[in-house]
Amino acid sequence: MAVKSFMAGDVLWLAPQGWIIHDPEFLSPASTAELLETLKDGLDWRQQPIRLFGREVMQPRLIDFHGDTGTRYRYSGLILEASGWPVELEKLRDRLANDSGERFNTVLCNLYRGGNDSMGWHADDEQELGPDPIVASISLGATRRFLLRPRGGGRSIEFRPRGGSLLLMGGDLQHHWQHQVPKTARSIGERINLTFRRVVMRPRS
Image (cartoon, rainbow, N blue to C red; front, side, top):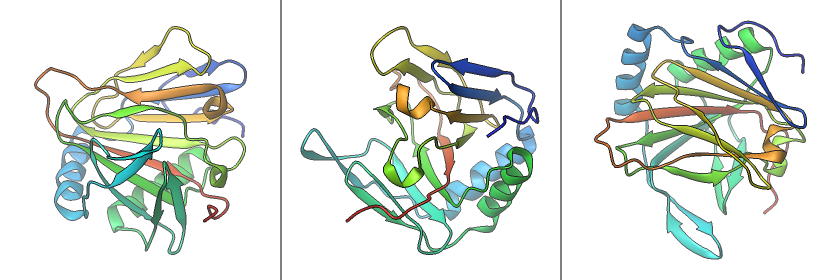
């Protein structure tokens, strides 16, 4: 994919051929605040178990999943199946398609209730996402640290996406880099993160 220069943020290229764009003003403050409240009250937030290192643990955040009806997405032993698009998420999907040229067919919604909720080191490299997936991540609510590190070790790169910002990742980034949202001891408010992906094949059973 040729990266379109449609956002305010610059392209950061990450070896060997990955890239990330940070647009801190993708949504206006008013739209961000309204969307945060609408999704917080309107989605079916649940805490679901995943498998890590051979054992089942509860995810340290709440999730909900939407997308084209029947589309399935699997990670860490959890299989999610979409049953359509709430209107607010559909509008964001269509705007992303118009701005980036990428037609996403799923969105994983994450609700971080406070600083103790987190996302561990991982990469969005599941087989059903295809060889070089593009992932769009929209943040609402509190600002949290977003870290990237090379898979083989090395210094982390830090972003602090605030409410209304967009991170767009692509190229071979998911095969050579990992990312996380770490816990924080600071008193911090709620954050919703919307990660749009394109599933290109069904996960194996």
